[in-house]
Length: 257
Ligand SMILES: NC(=O)c1ccc[n+]([C@@H]2O[C@H](COP(=O)([O-])OP(=O)(O)OC[C@H]3O[C@@H](n4cnc5c(N)ncnc54)[C@H](OP(=O)(O)O)[C@@H]3O)[C@@H](O)[C@H]2O)c1
Image 1 (cartoon, rainbow, N blue to C red):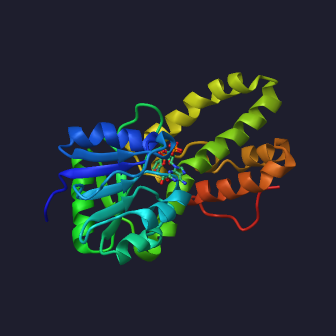
Image 2 (image 1 turned 30 degrees about the vertical axis):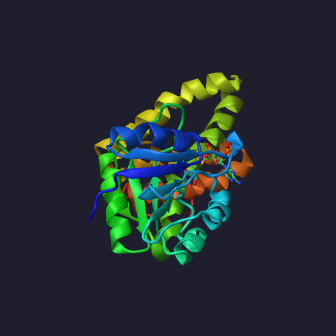
Image 3 (image 1 turned 180 degrees about the horizontal axis):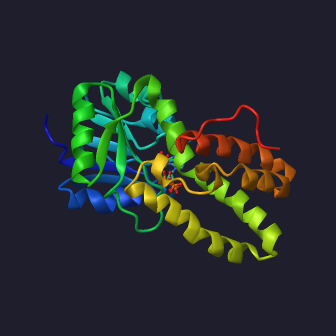
């Protein structure tokens, strides 16, 4: 396997900018860069061993179709939600294709280091080159391709966006109970949420779960169900079932009334 030494980065959003900062530090020379808003044409890409399409998911397929690629060149996207289908036009022109999806929400200044990376590739060399590059960027590569891609991405969404949505519902209930402002409720609940997740660094969910379900305290669960806004009860019930299951408590067919 030949390590990747040169790259082109198309797109300069959160991930494109992070790549432009991190690749040179990982020993990869940037031979071309482009972003739509700069207005110019895509520069020649032939000296890049890998072309990263760091653009919005919907722009990956049309951009791949526009590229002039050479045989054997690697064209990769960074989208967890996409398989290699949107890169098919580049593949038809003789390129190898792949994906290196950093399992991290990028905000200003975020780095790749410490994240896992879902790797896919049209062939073994594409997969091993992207895995090797992911390691050089400080990530832990995991193969995540083919038919399991949607399942892989659904898991990632449950771990990130779904946590935020759940937190938003907790804030809503907390505000109703305490009449606090949204920022105050968020600030009050955040250390609790971060602390619960922090435990997962050292323990599996079965040991990290706390609360009435973990203790098998059905009286408290009943009181919660009565107090919650009606529309939150089905979500609370499903999560209680999951907590009982993970905490190793027997699941009761009949929910506490
Ligand atoms: N952000 C994250 O946390 C994260 C994490 C993992 C993976 N990813 C993936 O990384 C990729 C890039 O995401 P991002 O967060 O960096 O996006 P972003 O910050 O929203 O930036 C999007 C980029 O795509 C370009 N773009 C949008 N539509 C385009 C089009 N039709 N043609 C050409 N360029 C177009 C934009 O160009 P202009 O602004 O110049 O118009 C901009 O450079 C996506 O596949 C995303 O799924 C993101």
